[in-house]
Length: 352
Image (cartoon, rainbow, N blue to C red):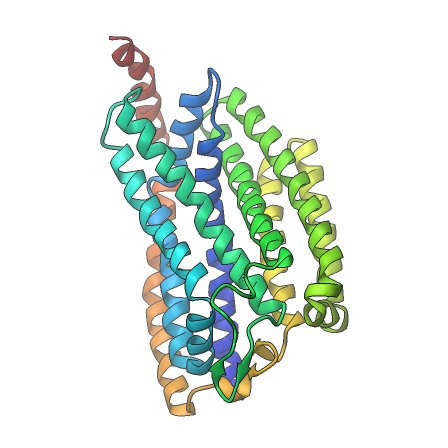
């Protein structure tokens, strides 16, 4: 079982990384939708600068998670792909539409109808994916996916359409908005744009308050619609949940004190702790209460091959991602000066 747990931990860590980095990217699309007023173009330009170089790279974690789950825990993969076919399909459609819209929008001029249309497609698709991923996760965590003798007994629209699941879907949206806002604050600070820093600071605080409210609603609903999750949280994950709450308070305090880099780190940490708490709360189930870690695991030989392949792949992937972020997100004075020079030319070209 040591091999099985090792692979499970790696897969869960990949889920956490995707939730943190991908969540910040999806949240950028949410704020693109709410960009308005005189600063709308600057806000959208900042969002594009933040997402452009690295956003597609985050999906590598989702691909690895899908392949890893299929290989290491085929029963869980089969159950989830059948029971949650609808929300997963809608989430994938959102990913595809979002990527296409982001690229098409970048190929047309500002202040054109085509750019506005593609912008709306981009922002709408950015809300679809996290919402349906959140609703699907809630269906699993609340034990609404019923399995008998290895066959799914849940209707395609059941489980992920309960009030609890819809609340968690909305919570996923608001959490993505928080992650994006704190990230965009730092991006604006690096670009020396104090007006945008304040704009996204306000957005981060509003999104944080909404997240807290949705969290309270989910807690109220959990005894009735997710008792297994609530009992598991109280039995296995209570210290981690308390730590999550304290870190969340620290993130809010950092925003109030304008310690933006610390706020970003703490917001990312809160997200990681939320997923860690979820994992501990439903242990040892992969799909409560019928699919466990032990009865869903593939043969040891298959898991060993997967682990070896994962280690080799990570040895190539992690340095590549580090180089990607270092080149496009590191502080390079020459590049920053070139970007600022280009920005000063843009108003003149748009006026013409």
